[in-house]
Length: 141
Image (cartoon, rainbow, N blue to C red; front, side, top):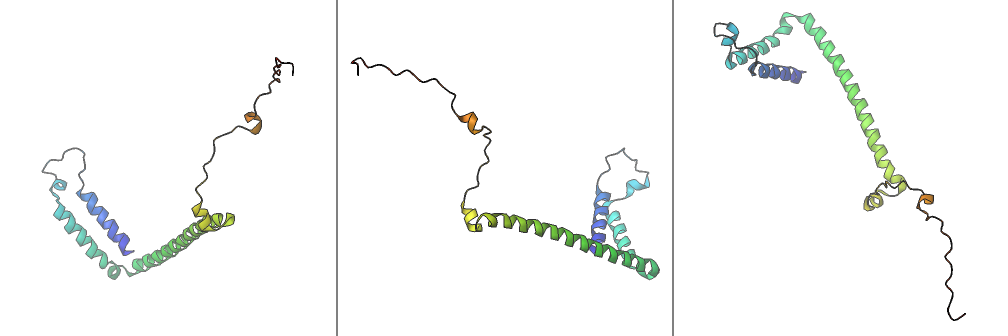
């Protein structure tokens, strides 16, 4: 949970430091006076204020911790389901070579190339030809 808050804070700081690319603001506008150090100071003040949030709002903090626990349980159940699917798939891939022979035997054989030859045996057979006449021997044999 703390790592998510840290990541969100880091993302906010990065977004605050990126240029807007929009229309130019004049120097009289207060938002033009905010620098990187001001943004970092504001972010650190926000983080220190978050640590005191549970002291000020104990009920909101309790509800938030219950919600975070429920979210954690759901995330854990989802991770277990994904892990189960991955391990089932890996087991089926390992079992496929074992069905045809040992794994080392399957690893030694080169992978068979799939043929793109679509001709059947009748297509390959030569066309019918008439019998050639036998040449007669000049000597009458």
